[in-house]
Image (tube, one colour):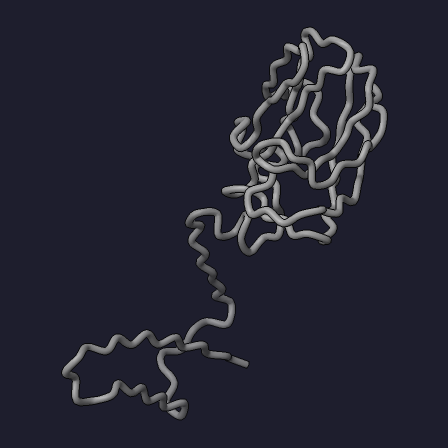
Length: 186
């Protein structure tokens, strides 16, 4: 079965006397095409796939770009930290890079946060629920991880503690319900 989709874009200029028309004669098909020939074309412009058709909100989520693009580090209180990509102990054969966060110094109450900007911001809606899935491991981190949705200036829309981090990779999940709408959350 063959289905045809025809898109016609017509532009009208003042002064044209005729209306455009399109006639399709389905009784006279064109050239024969091999049934084993398949093709697809998808032009990725401005993240129309990732962040567009693809429902993922996190940009460069598994560091497939081999950079920390879209990720940033924020510290509050008296804390000193740095982040980099690490390929020495991958999660699996498909996720060969991980984000390494080294906390060099922190006082009580200090926080170190890793932020993702999404695709020109992460659009969230008040009352909507967002699933968080991440994998983490640590050699010596004594605290808990917390997943958040927040504004660019740090207003927290949703937060949930998601567990202690051990020395082996572990899957962590959370469901965050946003308390406000924001087209540029992180």
